[in-house]
Length: 63
Image 1 (tube, helix red, strand yellow):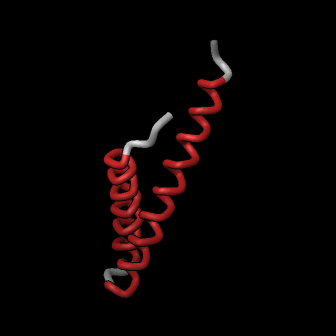
Image 2: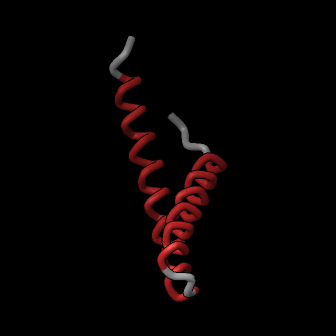
């Protein structure tokens, strides 16, 4: 299963926006929001890669 760079980009952006939005509720300081968005992007990337591996394993076991 080959990866799609465009899909990965959208997942990373979505996770970054979600985490930054949640942090915006608590604190509107850029010193908090920027690292939170970066951490959210990293979590999104890792989640997307884990999802692809899981899906590849599940589909490989089916005829």
